[in-house]
Image (cartoon, rainbow over all chains, first blue to last red; front, top):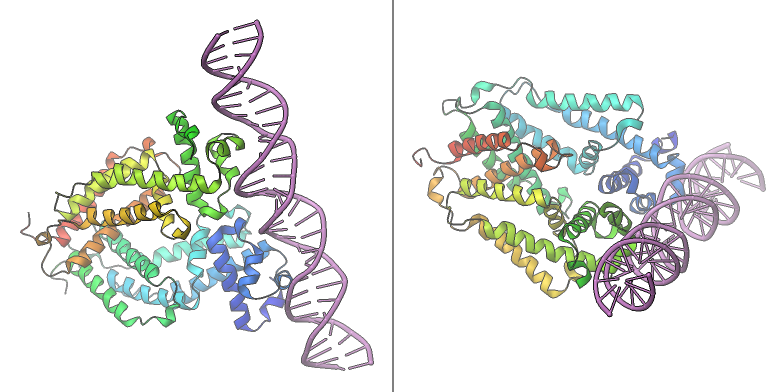
Length: 211
Length: 211
DNA sequence: TTTGAATCGACCAGGTTGGTCTAATACTTG
DNA sequence: CAAGTATTAGACCAACCTGGTCGATTCAAA
């Protein structure tokens, strides 16, 4: 990236980033076409190479940007003093939706990195990516109160079941509102529905006594 | 498709189909390259167009083939007299794995059709695709004994939670054994693990009295 | 009026595309 | 063995797309 890009108005930066994130996320690095990106971003082809010296340069910039965003605006904000696993996930989902709404392609883009070929990345990006993953793990599992769970179920397995359930719910929501901006959707009934699911999970996996 | 293709030895047919299914599933119709397909199938470029008159012809053939396979070897074999939802899903998973093992790309390929542009398909394929979806629904939900479920949870929601859990488990398995043929994997401990998960679901979502 | 940063899109060489065709080989039948 | 047919690989084609360049133009500041 050059200082040319960073001195753009933030809206324009955001528009270009979103376009690029979208195309990279959907097509993967190799197949992502810079033509498609500039079209989506509504800028001329020349400008992209004026801001970034190559396609790969743009790609690395997006990685760095996404790592930062997910760390600072999402993971770091997860409150690990909440020791109730389900409550923590509940709050985590709210956060995720918030970030997702402003930056819909970052999560998919970061997801694709998991299968990407890191070997050519600069060292500092590899480190930060590894750091992100361990941070994510810690933010989910550190300081969880195991005693809330029924003692006749394997807590580890219950963790998984709860997580899969939440991911499944997220997926169905994505499918349901595929073509709408999230801001245009009234989320309150969805959160209610989500909470009903969480309530079921609670009554199912937590022991009766535990409130 | 021409009779040229169907009179090939079945192994060769299968190899070509698998190659094509794989590429179409991974890249989508437009981007799937016939060059990649013939390379993957280990045949010369000419042969593909000797067997199928065009890329689109091959594509339609694969749709028909996959619809048939999933109907006959998978859905139709699901036993709807089993009214215990979890047991039925358990059996369904076994079937799915069986089919998956012999034909790993059919499910993903069929999955991509959901987002594909049906509008140009011949009428009979549209109908059969619609039929497949209603069949799938029926095979999952018809004749389920609701009384097994705890009466303090919404059965519909419990359905979803259970399904998401199973899908989640399937996904983690796919990731775990991404690069191995399924036949090379010793499945028995996995089935045991799976059954432990099912057991938890049972104790969680079914009422105590219901066995 | 002059400068130079910002912008666009025509353009380039190289590569890939779906599809054709030739020429060689393999197989069958006399 | 010979003749003919079925099968095969891959060189080849025009059309198109690729990442990247560059000259032409605009326009605000000096």
